[in-house]
Image 1: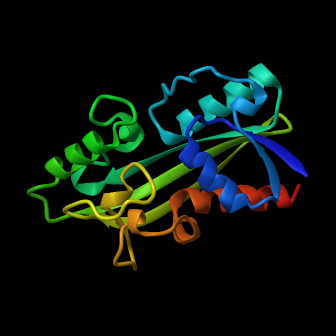
Image 2: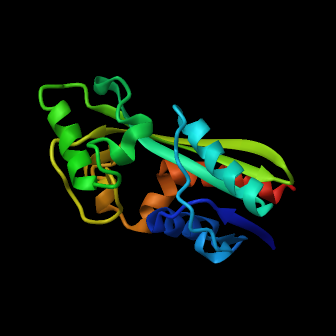
Length: 192
């Protein structure tokens, strides 16, 4: 069985990816390899940040690994919050403040089109490969649902009348940006 390190400290991401991979690959967390370093995301794009994470782990531990970066892109906000999604309101990981800032920025906007984007950087046998997943949707005027994390309570994917936060993990994992990128990653690994 393939063994891969997922370069994240985000328990929600780890849970989502583990559920998607479903035992096809032995997924190791940073804790499991003894990495407690904070990997700085200094890139200006999702691709750069994903690469920074995977290269850091590969260079330091010499293990096959992947890193991802994800975010919400809102058309009326010129693609914001984008790579700053986790720290849009200032403090890293303050989901409530981030959502409040988005809703305030959109309060007079009729165009509420948005998308979640994930880019995965996989380093496999010393070579880097990229996989991307996107899900289109709209931003609701108020929060709805208690599942998921981040912007899930205000993001309604196209073709659905519920937010990501109103979906079960299984439902979200069928259509999410991360799920689509992970499917491409698994497909690649099946072929090696």
